[in-house]
Length: 341
View 1 (tube, rainbow, N blue to C red):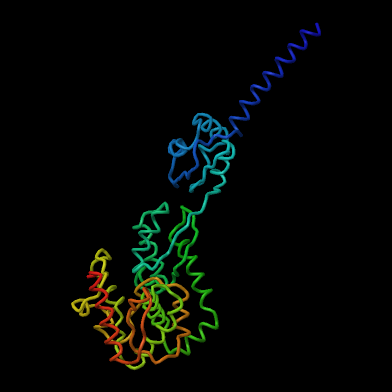
View 2 (cartoon, rainbow, N blue to C red):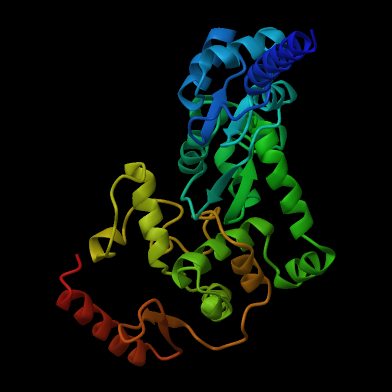
């Protein structure tokens, strides 16, 4: 009798263990086949969610069963979800229901125009570029501007984190807040002392950034040089503005490696060889250092600058036209020797 009871007890324990293990594996055991990110758009249905999840789970049927049990077929939040090895179905389903999505990194570089930037940004968002452009155009109008291109000064070169589901307005809000934080009372005082408008400051900052190649150790020197030219009533004659003028006409599809004399007459209000004064706006998205360089420009007497072939990425500065002619010839000879056209 005792033996029979023991056998029955063992059977019960074994069955409980068997079904308990199945239950545990179904709900909590690792069901991730490979690490990756699952994208679930706002208008997804349950089948679309299962299709998106399918490549990342070992047992799709088990995931579906747990998902239905936890009402994922009725309630979910869109997003970009990180499926990591070791996660069970319960964790995966709860993550999607709670909207615990993973952020994506966005690199804002020295884009020539906002539409270039939007094209890159939207590759990491749910919305297409047309939707982004339309909404940012509306934001610009609300701020008293013509279109999204006029929002360029609100952006700074850096890496930022956003969700895949970010809306254009949410996206811009981050930069709007950063812009307002940047313009401290100290910077506003320097702005007033400069005698420049903020648009002029950003336009000069963009020239400084392009001319310096982003190297901070030359920015203030370059800013001082261009302010000298501007205040003397001289044309700025900045090659990057010519390149920008050409890029505008070719929709940024014709790379310019070398500015030639034929380029200098390119008709554009941004071409500082053809027009006196500061361009009407920035020729690229800038970084904070280039704006600060304009606000705290070096007090020098330089009028001319030329790339230094002996120090790649750096320049020779001078107040002498004769010395500049020598520097320019040395640079042109170097370009020719490298067959750069």
